[in-house]
Image (cartoon, rainbow, N blue to C red; front, side, top):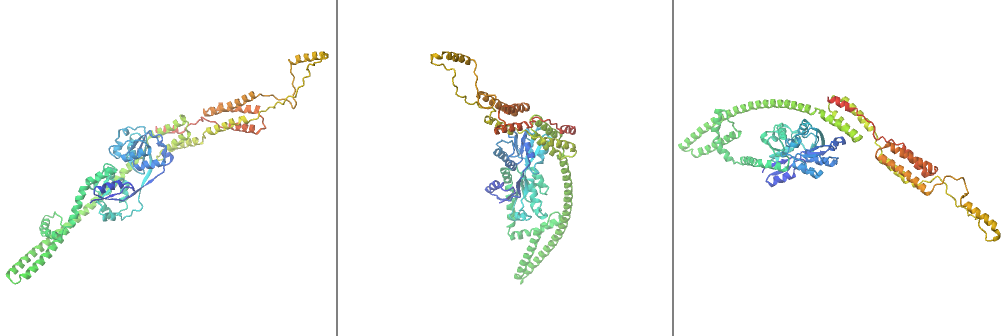
Length: 610
């Protein structure tokens, strides 16, 4: 029964182990890596808002980003390297992701929708150090690429150098590996003898990229089997395809170990002839087991000859048998000497061959290291090249947010992102200085506290009805005695005539008198109501002007409301004082809705890009 070892991180190999056990394999879980989620900054997460395409490398990338709950453009095109990653995207964000037919980097880059991405904003959600080919190819195709690193793989701290002894003692035949990080975690801490045993195992990997990386650890390509992806079904199909071959090899080894000693003795009788031919031709290898079998056969033959000699000692037949046996012993001795000579020559030849092979391997290893170093330097140079179109695009995005959206904080965030991009490349000092000046200018602009001012106006508006008018209340008129009343006595006709005349005069002119202090202008209830409504109208007009960002109308309305309060209401009243103070404070507000800002970095970026 082949024994398969699954090295995937904890919790990810259980399904594959069950499949293998149901198919008759022995499966063991031995995680060599653990997943650690990272917390990117807001600057690193901001490209997700305006992304045209978002690519997720693995299920861990989806889960790590979902925990951060970032602002993400769900209308963007989502991509997943495999089906399980696509299912996780739908469960986390409710978006269907595009997946390639071939579940690897090459299959993803072969999608038609990623063939023409010139000018597209693409975010690659990935682990630390993974999938460099995707970023490189998309940049070459003209995309504005942003890496969003949300997790990293770390070797399990409990691993020690003796784990290979444990694997070897459990007769491990095959090892499942799904990442280059797992290869490093297994091979890096091992000594040469442990690596030698490990290199003889069968490896089941998720992609050609991992297979090539395994070959750098001196693992033969014949021992590497590439699955159709990292999914459990793909790995199981690859292992099951190779299962019959491993079973036959396992049976062959078991049969060889359980062969009886008599079989070795019987084959040893034919071994000297083979060895003699090998000595004559000096081309075939001589096994130490064959030599030992020959010695055993000589001992057995000598014992048999001695017993036979004792039984036939009395007669001539016995002598003849002993002579024949002695002759046979002489021949066996001669053949044994020839065998030893051939073995010595063969060992010398093997030693010389091993020296030549070791020298050749050492030379090839040195050459491979030089080629690898040159390739890494070339890759670093290509990776470090700065795309002028990407810089220009970010600068234009900053200008759009400043002039079209009046979003000063958003403009500052885009410029900070541009500065982070330029910081990794030489020759951008002047451009970065201009960018920092623009960032300081934008950060110094304080946005108008529209909501707070609106609420202050509303508070003043509700307190207008509590103000006391600056006017006296009319006193009750004194009781009037009608001095011109007519008398019923006829003798008073003259007085009655005079009184009648006075009544006629009073119907044209009325004179009233009030007791008390000097009389101030009198306001009727209707006039007081109209004054209150006029003040409220001015305050409401100030609120509308605030929301429509019309500063001049705002201040004119406040001034008119303040004048009416000061003219018609008592100045020594607490409510009047409170309203006038609030209006005075509102008149001091700096309503700079459209500050004049000029980006110094615009010209510097144009000069740098030319």
